[in-house]
Length: 210
Image (tube, rainbow, N blue to C red; front, side, top):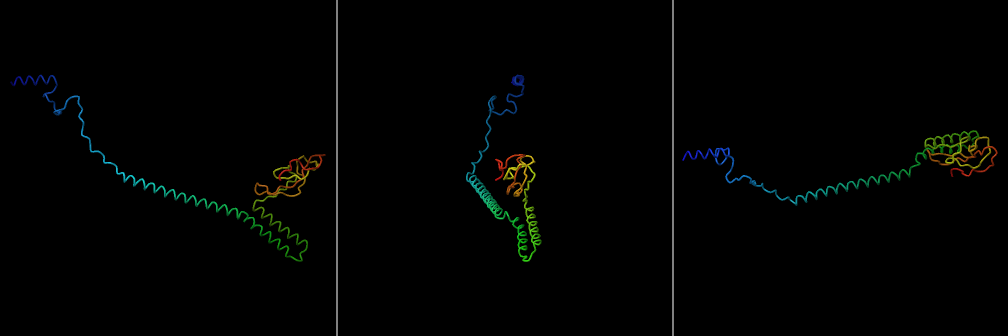
């Protein structure tokens, strides 16, 4: 009997390469080619909908507060801008007006001199003119006296054409000075323009600035 069992064991070992009919590591009930399903872990708990809703409402409240603050700041900036523009329009001539006070003072002093000689009156007028020129300089008001320059219809207004030995379209006479404020024409200069030798008098077709 023992020899028979030994023979069977030897035969099994040669056929399977194992010493026992039930190899180690193979559990009872396992069958080759069949996958075992492991036990799944516990399912995740259902989300707390009330907590999610609370967080969403808090975020909405924060965003609304931020929007209201931004709106209020924008409105304040707009009102300040309007106020600044209104003040700029209202007091735009403040600097120039303050400079003219000296001119008025000079005129009043000249008129208050009851027994002033013509020379004294002339000196007073010259001082007044000097104060006015200084006021113009400080506010970037520049006189246009274009005698001898080429006629510029953007800055000059031609009143007549005069035959002259000077080239045509040259300003030969200034009837009234013009003035610029920075690059803007406050008043064009009233001028007579050369028409060249032997041309008839008369204003040019394009008289220039109105």
